[in-house]
Image (cartoon, rainbow, N blue to C red):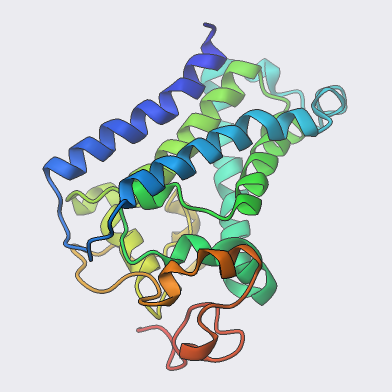
Length: 261
């Protein structure tokens, strides 16, 4: 097993370690969902499949040959830092737009926000098309734009996965950490029912720069869509707006009165 494969293996290891930890030391009480952890594990394997097969469908050799920047000279350490900063910004832009554009919200992102739990299992639940987008953005940034060494590119992919998993972790975290990584308490606000207008970035720098940063000491509230919308996976798979009856047309999961100040 080489270093690239090792970084890929670290993602499910991280997922299951955090899953066990939050089961032992949960910080917030969410509505119970029978089979919820198994559902999250199933989506994790779907994500792993997307990560394995989508790069095979992309013109990766062409991307390598036609890279915009030869980032291989950065080496592994600097390549990881630069790669993560650029990738996190691209992911921030994607995340802002799936909350802003109705068809992107319905077709790609509403499934992730549907769950009334913010935890490790929920960190893996995404529409399959959004999984494809994540892998495509990551491959484009690390291979075509930056031309990083394969090990650095794989490490950037792991860092992105870690940040995504961590912010859904149902444990308590210190406030100071929120300036380096999005804390679960802050991400719960992003998933709060009828809100979802803050904390888009995995790397908080982008929320700080664009005015969407909120670093809560604690969070208690309701997440997701509520019943029955939170369970309508079939409708969400075919791009139906499951919040239409509650919030009206093109709400993108946000209550008509808007987010709190």
